[in-house]
Length: 292
Image 1 (cartoon, rainbow, N blue to C red):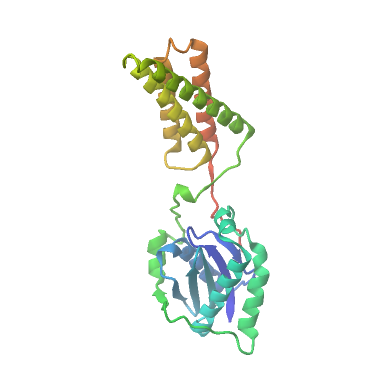
Image 2 (cartoon, helix red, strand yellow; image 1 turned 135 degrees about the vertical axis):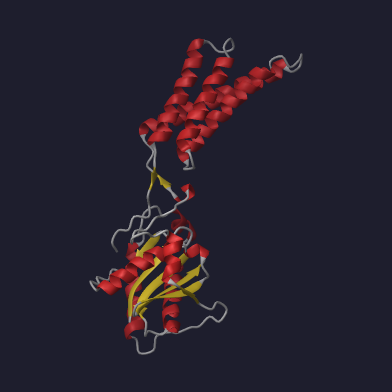
C-alpha cells in the first residue's frame, strides 16, 4: 500500500503539496519524520532513491525543479512506487509552471493538488492494473538512515536546518520602507548627477576635484547597495547596512562646501532611515511544517 506522498521543491526542499492522510500509527509518523529530513538535501542526491525505515519504505524521484516522495509498505513493489512518483511529477508539472513553483513562499502553497495525489494513489493501491513504467537510465540508490542524520545535523531527534539566505523570502514591505526606498533613490540620482556634472567641469582643467567626484560616486553606490539590502536577503545584512551608512556619512562630510549642512543632514538621515528599515525587514522561515 502507498500510505503517504509529498511533492517538494528540489532546490530547498520546500513542501509544495502532500496527501492529507491521517495515520496515527507511530511507525508511519516516525517514517514521515525521516522523510522531512530527506527533503532538505534532495538536490544533492541522485534522481531516484529509497530508504528503509523498519517495515516501511521511503522512495523519492526528482525531475526538473520538483521532487516527489512516498511512504509505502516495504512489500510494495519498488517499480510501482517509482511509477507512482513519476506520475505525480508529470501531473504537478502539467498543473503548475516553473515560475509559480519558484515563487512559492510558504509550505504547501499548492495543497489543492492533494485531490490529484489521492486519485493517483487510489489507482495504484486499488487499480486492477496500475501503470508501471520503468526507466532503466536512472537506477535508484539506497539511502541509509545514518546518512540522513549526519547530512541534516540531527541530535537527540531534533533537526538542525542550515538554510542559505538565498532561500529566504523577505517579510512584506512596509509603508515606511517604501518611503525610505523612494528617498534613497532620489539621493542616488542627486549624487550621480552632481558627481557627473562636477567631473565634466573639473577634469578639463585638472584633477584637483577628483576626490569630491569619487565621494559623489561612492555615496551613489552606497545608496544603491542600501536599496539592494532592503529588497534581498544576504549574509551579515545588519553589518553591511551600518557600514554603508558610515560610508554615506563620511562621503557627505567630505563634500562640505559643495553641499550645505542641511543637504548633508538630509542625505545622512535618509541613509539612517534606510539602515533601520533594512534591519526591520527580516527573512521569513518558509520551512515550517504545517502538519500535513
